[in-house]
Length: 306
Image (tube, rainbow, N blue to C red):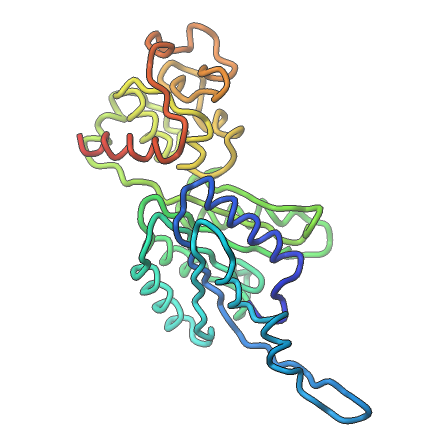
């Protein structure tokens, strides 16, 4: 990102999304990977004489690193290093992720444009870089990515780029979330995914014993396996906070309606939406209910420990 773009409508959407995601996912820290390239400002002209824009003015209106002053629950830290060499910059990012003082956190990648096209430039992030950063993150962390509109001819651009984002992270189609505000800045979108807790062999055996749905993503298999083992319900919102995306889209990602998937329920009714009585587990109505992402993460940890 360059200073010239700071503090426009896109930043309003950008940081609105980040603060809301931090609240929903319980993030305690936000690391903005700025891909910083300084802006060279032209001079002012006053009565025919040239004068540089005063530093105090540039700092007030167009210094991207001032975002560290933002008041929010997830303290903002910015990687201010100038983006020149890709390999050197990636190593800086990896070290800063390891050095974070609080977790879980958000790692926000903020290039000028977004994911690499066929001929990438310094304004893009490579898929291999995205994957390397994802591997460095710890369970519970949220990766958020800025994507600018890639064309002006009316062709779809959000879904193709979201699919590219998912492939780079080796996620299943639909596992990444999408955030945007088309009435404020229609030319930007944000993709996000939460790093899941890796299943241990015991958890993998449990999943294979409980159900066999090859179309269901590994993250959802892990959650359903734990809920079945402990006979615990979890809300759609709690599951969404783990796997990413919106709560209202979780039901479709659980696969066919069946007792093993009926543990994911509506916050309002405590029951799975649209399920017939024979598709609901017989122990469901008397089972405990996990309502938040933090509660579900704690339950997953207990499942893996067992």
